[in-house]
Length: 91
Image (cartoon, rainbow, N blue to C red; front, side, top):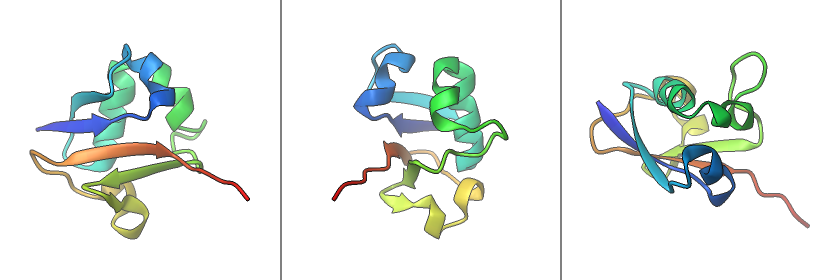
């Protein structure tokens, strides 16, 4: 199924300047894998050497943080929106 992924400004150059892209997947992990397959330049920004999502990358599905759901196993449905956001720190 086709899922919309929202990308932050910092990642858009690796996705041909697009703010949203459509990829396939039945859970968040498959969506991320489809995203890096379609736009390989995103891989080093999103995934570490073991293939896990980097600690400073936050992923939301319909505005809910996947860390509080089933993480990468969180299922997605047609019409869902996955947002990728870099972590922000400050003081």
